[in-house]
Length: 223
Image 1 (cartoon, rainbow, N blue to C red):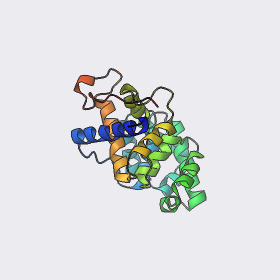
Image 2: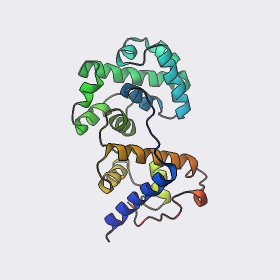
Image 3: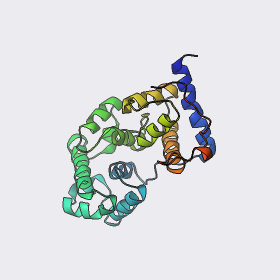
Image 4: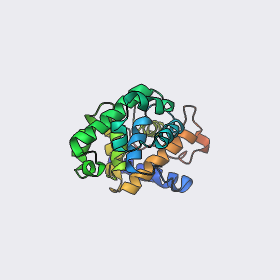
């Protein structure tokens, strides 16, 4: 087998082991696609528990809608999402998203997601505060588009198992997964959630390799 085949086999084996260990994780938890978008923006540089608190505040204020966030004062929004950290910056980012949504798509997520994946992604990346991980989270979890989400946890796990090295960039790692797996929204959804759980439980900064379901995975090549 060549290196590409070996790496693809490793990627598929990792999924099989983690899925067997954790089971279906039902990620992303949200009542609406718009709530997913808000969560994707708020979760930058903070724990998910802090995001849950912020989203609860927005729900209590009855403004967790594109129209609600579009109309609310920036200072009020910042106060409501204070638990998410960097709340003033994140309030500006949320406003930037809903301003874009209203200007370009009449405030409709359905209208936004009606376009092609590449086109939507390019638009999202032009919005203040939305980088690749956030854009792809919005595409996958809110828009149900087949885009694999990569985060720091993903790279940490792959590096520790000899599949990529430090030089591997976001698109390198994303392409690796998407070339190794069938194009599937549920699969990409579950795989990303499995990697996050693995990083939190086993592949922490002080790793617990002896207990990890991936302990026997040794990469075939470095990307």
